[in-house]
Image 1 (cartoon, rainbow, N blue to C red):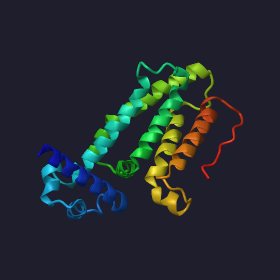
Image 2: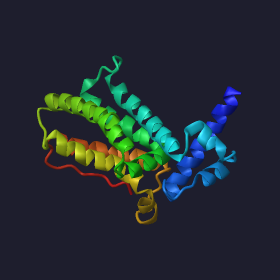
Image 3: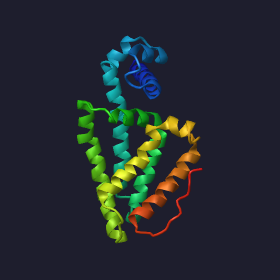
Image 4: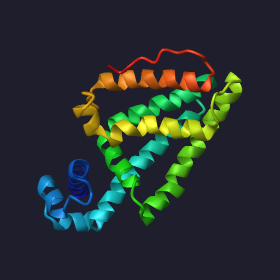
Length: 212
């Protein structure tokens, strides 16, 4: 019975993520979620206490996983501290690629002003900034060169991380980039690695390779 409940919850979550991504949270009804998941409409209320509870579970699950991969950089078995900043970027980009639909739902909702989103900002996103700042300071001390202060660096870097998942239709329809293509992940990791080196290491000239 427990396995059946877990399977039902998983189907509802997957259906909601797909519909929220395509139609938005407010444009999606509980009836549509239930129909896509092929479950009784009452299941959404039973398992998630309604559509808002379902949205919150999707976002919290995404952020819990995100924090886990961010904080994995601090594990004791990582001996090469000189590459911690690049390691952090790689695990974050891989996580976003593997959870691209959930990322889209989260970043769209992040633009709204609600009690839930404010709580997310004061908890998970504050932890995210803290983790980045620690790694950035390590990198700064080891390289002895930095072109921009942390706040500017962080704003620019967050933009690079979030933009593809916030505007997937723009990438596919205008730039002809498919987010589900492993080649995109490979080239985007290389691009951001070059950008990090250019911005944080004080390198005067660097060829930033296009995703292409």
